[in-house]
Amino acid sequence: MGNMVKMMIDFYNNKKVFITGHTGFKGTWLCRVLLQAGAEVTGYALAPSTIPSLFEQTNTKNDIHSILNDIRNLDAIKQSMFISKPDIVFHMAAQPIVLYSYKEPVFTYETNVIGTVNILEAVRSVSSIKSFVNVTTDKVYENKEWHWGYRENENLCGYDPYSNSKSCSELVTYSYRNSFFNISDSPAISTARSGNVIGGGDYSEDRIIPDCIRAIKNKDEIIVRNPYSTRPYQHVLECLGGYLLLAQKQYDKLFEGAYNFGPDDESCITTGNLADLFCFAWGQEAKWRIQENNGPHEANFLKLDCSKAKSVLKWEPRWNIKTAIEKTVEFAKCSTDNERIVCIDRQINEYFRKK
Image 1: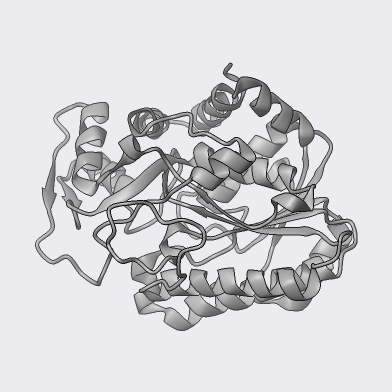
Image 2: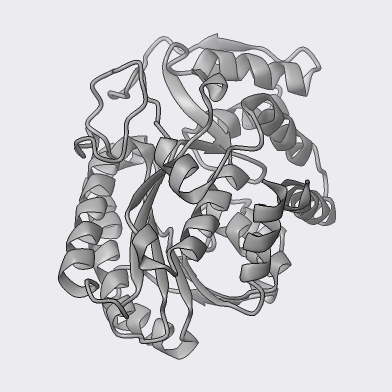
């Protein structure tokens, strides 16, 4: 894995990369990985949606070309992409929270579906682009509560508005690939489906690890909504490594398609087990309890089969869930922005450079 990782990072040196959703948690991590690799990064997104935000804490806007605008604005996204003339595009802009999608379904569908249409229209208009990756979610699948992983050829039919909007985004991408990008010299078009992502700097509401950290820092007991639900948890660098490898590999269009990037079985655990691991890593008598009202529907069991990514792309997970939690706690215990910058860049270097 070591040589492949080095080859992948070297590939991005001097590449022009366009990222939608760059001000978010995953987007900021991707920006910093690409900056370490020597890429020229342009980001297009709304202003950070959380206070604090990882994007602001790491001062990433000073190292990239950051455009603050709405993915629903077709003219703006087309103009921004035309000016930047990227080689590679990662589409990560989204309304990503399941519970919020119940409150704001129209905004969720507009952002996640029409936003995908808009970015693909922009890709159509810029001849420099060689590779496009649309980042969706493991929740795109019709969840039958199976105890085995979903494969890329399973039915797409997310239950809640967020998950369903991402299923629609997958279908939009499939249609555009077949209708407009089906000749040899057109950009390669793929979708990437990943599990529940954790890591330093996620300040979102209604996500288990950020909720744990907030509770601890407020000296409150951690509240867990669905302790028996099984999810494929992984560190943010795991899925980003997959996206980066896919975008590189599909310079040969034979590699384009849909790919799962999830953890091995040992990291597909219940939310209660995750809370236990967090409390152990944090120490200081951290503890949790079950929320009595579970709220809107959420799947009880969800796991990905990543055989395709492993066999076709030669991708492999590197950090298990215990390591992912430890890295997340390490970041959460940083007390200054300078410490956070040092921590996140050190973790990136450790993940991608380790032999």
